[in-house]
Length: 328
Image (tube, rainbow, N blue to C red; front, side, top):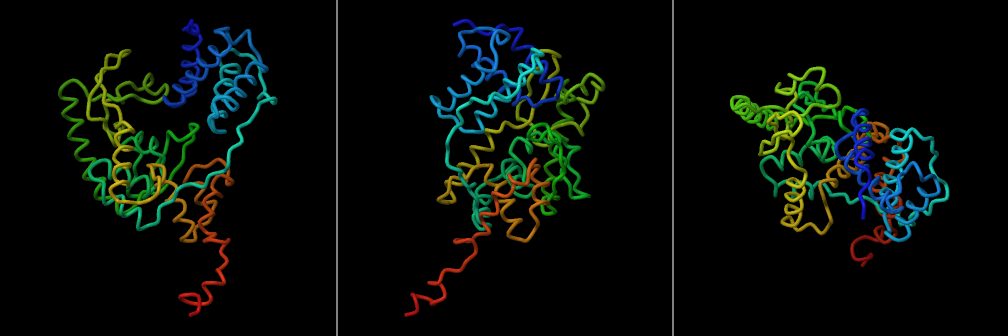
């Protein structure tokens, strides 16, 4: 089967980079464009239209049983292709079969369970997990933090590479101040050694690398959680240190949950769910939590109010009113 024209996929990449979309968005959008082209017999998208887009999205729902979020991502990728790359106007197709799936409530750990899982973690993975729960970050938001994004004095974390390219400020836990300072001392020592050997570079966001190329060697731009290995960039030839790979933390958390013997399917993202839920339990308003999480709509944040139901929407069971043993 023939591959999509290289210039088409390269055009998608360049358009995404010009709009400072994340590398993960770039990977997923290019993959969806490739699948769309293959689905229609490698015909060029300029020869296709809304009907073909609708057919592809419906196929994902009917035959591949993807989730609504996955179908929406595919749709967003194709709209981006037509509007921003091919410069062809296109409205979201209407005749699309949508996935019918039950709404799942997020997995949330109790405070005791959070402590149990954290107790099974150590080193950098533990520090990342503490930040996920203490600041409500997504995993990739934590791993892509730069040194300059942390402001312990003001107790703030600046999230500049959030979902959808949005930026926000969330809290920096006071209890992490000393551990993070010790961690950054080690990162600084490692960075100085890298520089001394001709390395020490880091990828810079968007066009900033062209405007201030020397900033790629400055410590404030280094990742808070750098990778253990150095790689050579194929374009610039710079010897760079990327951020810690997400699988390193994901595997550590999965193993920690298993060792803690918690009967829940908890992941790194569960810390974020628990962060929001515990803030609600402590009486913080939903709008504040929405801003801390970076949700575009408060409706997304409202899902965490399920924990306040405490059974039947906060109603005390009549059996509990009878006392221990049903009033015996």
